[in-house]
Image (cartoon, rainbow over all chains, first blue to last red; front, side, top):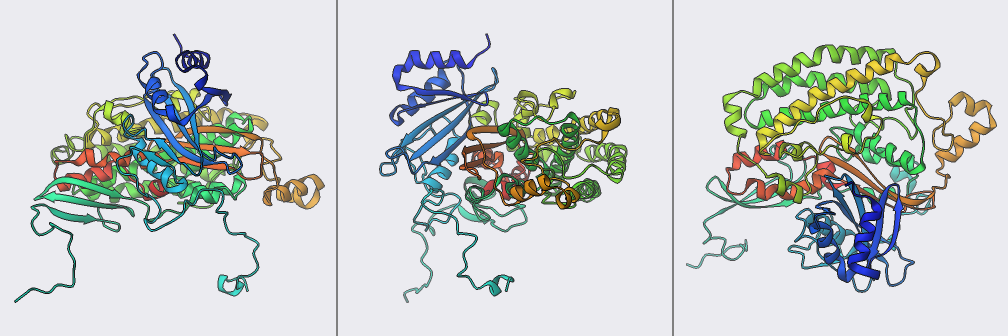
Length: 168
Length: 408
């Protein structure tokens, strides 16, 4: 039986009730959210339930929505079931002041570095991670650069000495 | 007399029986800028810690300030051994997001370019494995065919390594006759060279002894570590994005997905080698299909999308519409639709994914690159633990670690 987005949605609702919410389908991929407290339960259910079989973590990344007060930071998981060839997007959100989210690295070895990267850029604290430290930026850095509060330099600023940049 | 030292050594570093060995960030064995701090007991590797990030360039942050077309040159610099695949992957992501339909001829031209890029990527990887096992000849010999591939790129887009090839909606110009002549030359000559290269290595006793049984990984562990591409297929899983989620009309082509069994260095070599033959066959099929187009169809090289595809220069000078579009595109004044998309292509190293979130502005709200290299490099310690140091070096090159893709 081919696995469809509806089947996945029904199974998740059957298991987690109203804790899984905001189902939507964007370009063929089913997306949904849940409170961050049950992220491991959801991932484990998706992994271990044989009729779902999302055993491959394609991607894990962070997103920062500064206007969503109380849910500024989002962790997005992209999962893949190879045998049924179906993808799934799952996200949990957390406040910028309380950034603890459970680590998925016990379930997926691949999450280890992806979570380190997400920590590095967004400051999401993955609880239980074996080695949560910066990976791409220097260890001395004391901010999380991909948060929206750090804009890129304005390209039209005029207080620079143009001659230094060969434009004088 | 008490010994005075200006160097503070970590506690226990005199008493310990293993040696700390630092490979990288610039070292001939790494073939790129990344570091390994290894603990070795004699010649056996006890443990290793990989350090990446030496050429991190904040691509994801940069992309948040650029209109879509300005992000293409950024993708060049991910896996710079096969930049055209990255470029096309990005264009395809944009086109899927904007729901653009492309003419078949554009798809086939893209397939040719992407498969050429795959060949040049695998060619470098396999010949470097040869260099690291002590056979330099193969590397030097196949370079002239990589050169020929680069000449084809040059003919199509004007540059060689960081190609910025194609545009959203098609190609910047049609392929010239010279490009097709060079492609024919490549198709005629390269299979023989590849056969010769293969027979230098594939059944070579020394090469087999060096690569068989080293750096192996089981299919189960490879999946858990997020392996994709040739490295996953060498472990026995036939996952290929070109087959599973065809893009750019890959469904029109007939090709095999080669798989290995043990996931060791030898299998990785053989899988890449077999994939190059499949790529040649795909290019031949695509070239055949392109020659079958007749009349006006045979001249099509882009879709009709004025919002994203730059108008012809002579039109810009003479027509109002074209001038407006030209200005709007160049200044990045096109508003994107709201939404998000994850789109992947089969890169040289595996599933190269683009996760794009748009809030309706002129630039992406967030763009994340799924870089296959970055994800599977974490398995390196498991692959080499307990093995010889010299095998670790071969494993490093057979994984095809590209610093640009590790760091983004």
